[in-house]
Amino acid sequence: MPTVLILGGTGEARRLAAVLPPVYRVISSLAGRVADPARPAGEVRIGGFGGPPGLASYLRAERVDVVVDATHPFAARMSANAALACRETGVPLLVLRRPGFAERPGDGWRHVPSLEAAAALLPGLAERVFLTTGRQGLAHFAHLGAQWFLVRCVDPPQPPVPPRLEVVLDRGPFTVEGETELMLRYDIGVLVTKDSGGSMTAAKLDAARALRIPVVVVDRPPVTPGVACVATVEAVVAHLQA
Ligand code: NAP
Image 1 (cartoon, helix red, strand yellow):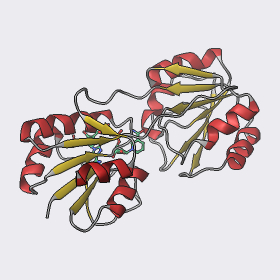
Image 2 (image 1 turned 180 degrees about the horizontal axis):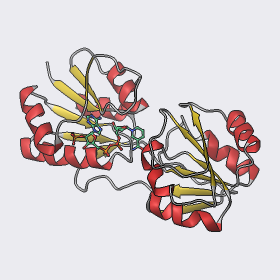
Image 3 (image 1 turned 90 degrees about the vertical axis):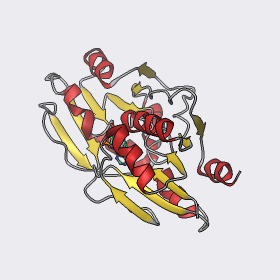
């Protein structure tokens, strides 16, 4: 029975674990960041591997036949580690990367390469900010005393955080109605998002377009050159079967 290791932490990774036929032994790996993660079907392991050498040892010990990197598009370190460990061990690697958000007419998007660059742009844009980039990067905004932040994340953030903020603990999927109501209630002047893509969190972009709120979009890091990459769960299944 071939063993598939899914590097997870996304809805796609969970769906892949659920739809892979029982001819495979499926192990899903989670980083352990979220206190109460949605659990994928099949075997689950939680926690870091200990860098590329740790992952390489794991691949050998569990006799993994193929790795599917279905991590979030911004989990750049894990993806780089997977590329290194797979190259070292000769285990095939397939990246599942959903497409980014699509800009539409009426969108006022400002593309930036990093959270630091997003923070640098904010003082010229608006005072009241809806920050949806996750709790881990909040330190990049902690020096902005003149801005007020509505921060939405799954678990409570740890300092350093911006001095003026309100935290909403929530996880998608979100609706356009809900996002519109939230942005109006908090008198939001600018939205900050990663280019995560996917349908779970896209409603905020529709709401911002309708409300004519500018959006700062943090561009995603590139996939490791030379690594096979597909955009859908179905394409992963087809690739594995081929
Ligand atoms: P990261 O910066 O790329 O990875 C940091 C370290 O966390 C890795 O070196 C690895 O530790 C461990 N790690 C990450 N993903 C792992 C996985 N699936 N299984 C086992 N260990 C993992 O990762 P991140 O951006 O903090 O994201 C952590 C997790 O949250 C990922 O699984 C990702 O899919 C999910 N996520 C991330 C975001 C985001 O915006 N970054 C959003 C939603 C969900 P070792 O070096 O010790 O192996």
